[in-house]
Image (cartoon, rainbow, N blue to C red):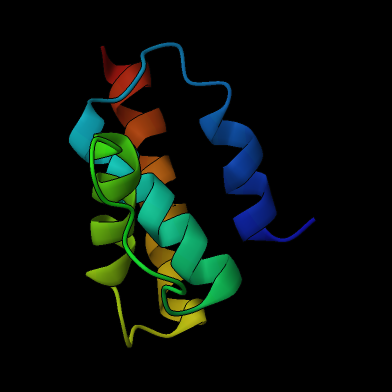
Length: 86
């Protein structure tokens, strides 16, 4: 299991749910790290969650998958560190 996969498992074990802004960042970094640049069209209408997820992912346009994977790993490590110090 590589560090990216390990971080995916560790994020599921957090005892405190991160705020929505952090959850969106995790989502965007995961998608960028696993799939690359955003695909498809932005959800419209009343799909506010879908739109927010799309926007967060689109904001990472052009970032390499490796950079996104490392940022995801670092963010999960930070979240875990905050839990252990609380």
